Length: 329
Ligand SMILES: Cc1cc2nc3c(=O)[nH]c(=O)nc-3n(C[C@H](O)[C@H](O)[C@H](O)COP(=O)(O)O)c2cc1C
Image (cartoon, rainbow, N blue to C red; front, side, top):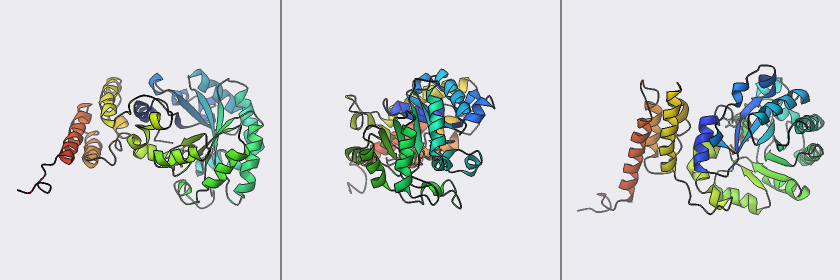
């Protein structure tokens, strides 16, 4: 997710789940290939498995960007056919490509020709006045003919005229049954559903309905512990203890120290940690301490320790039976 799932965010999320596949922000092929912005591919080995998401619509340029992404060590190359922003529309990529399935197939074929990595597609169910019940199966069939076997489908239309990108993530209604039917129609493909999934219970329901995967965006960002701490056990069947946000917060202190030593700023990391204790006692104090303190001169990893101490204190108070209300004397 643009401006959200940068390398610091992915480092945090990887501490919470070993098995969830993480995605980069969308990187445009023109920026990489024509602009030479290969620093956009920077990431840490600890983040893997990570998929690189590319935006573009020129097969040769996407092929070259794929080659660069593979060389940089990514585990999957994903083509964005879902982003509705104006900037992206002007470059003829993102969701508007739902109108050009043959071009998407051509792009994917060119990308597959330069790598053995999985080349995957993230799409919408349709755009503008398209009928998703007609367009989506046709799109999937044509793209799959290029050899793509994995797709993630954001289960709502994108209305490219008149809605902001943010509105396009909320206003067009979700159509999960249509996405579930795509799995029935294309049983050999690995299909994931995306859009509005905000708990592991909901994710499990989609898997029980036959989907191969579930992609979670905003909920994983805003409440990462709620989505990721039990994901390895509940979704991937791992026989390991659930991770905890406390352990992740402590590990992020070391990570932050290394980042600061390289000239980075604490706020670049802590901005992704604000939701770590969402739903837990002390969540507000945690959020406030990090957001107010991280930008002060000299702020360092000890800020995370101080905020964590507040959470621990709030948790102990919540666990204690000795509060005045519970034990009036
Ligand atoms: C701030 C933000 C940036 C996003 N950037 C991308 C992006 O770069 N590529 C992409 O495929 N989707 C992007 N999305 C869309 C999400 O991946 C996802 O499809 C959408 O939010 C619906 O899923 P959710 O309800 O689980 O968040 C972005 C969403 C948000 C909120």
